[in-house]
Image (tube, rainbow, N blue to C red):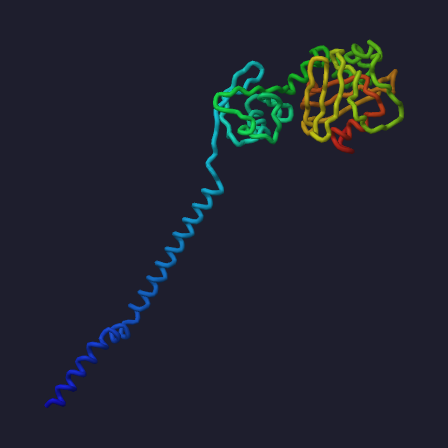
Length: 291
């Protein structure tokens, strides 16, 4: 009897000890579920860590933009501007071009002196409510010194139809009949020379005023200077350059700089030395791009 009881107890213990193993063994899906849940939890935690790291990195790489309100003064106009404090003067000019219609290259930003394009507003010391002055000319202002009259346009149209040389046209004789300016540079016929390092001076514009041309090749600008002002024209804004020898003085040319799309947007210059004509066209338009 004792032997039988001992066997029974062993069986019971064996049954109790092995029941969990038997359950897992008889239900393999439970094992798979546990493993899958563990993997999903680990993946989710990793994703959360990655997102947290990405958010932290973005916050470090892209600090919030700090804007500032100040006043721009242009031609006695006061314009309220909101702009990034760490934005550059060059970027400010692009922004202002849309507001005041002055090409970026023709703007000067003045704040305690002339501001450089690579300076930021913060570097300049611009604070809330500060006043910044803008100096610059619109293309219409540049052309104002030589705006043709209605009769001038009629005369040009008639001359164009008749193929009359520029220097013989009535509209240009008004300037040419005054004679060669005393201080104009000597013209050399049948010669081609590079642009000098100094401005071409002593020439005349449509109104008969003195004009000089300065070629700022490093800035890609043509400076048209008169007694009253200097206008800085971006080379890439010039649509064309046309010239013809003056009939009775072929060592000099009449030259038209096309600043717009119409005949009225031609800036006429008289008594341009012939030896510099090719170099002028090359500098403004590039070789073989002029007419």
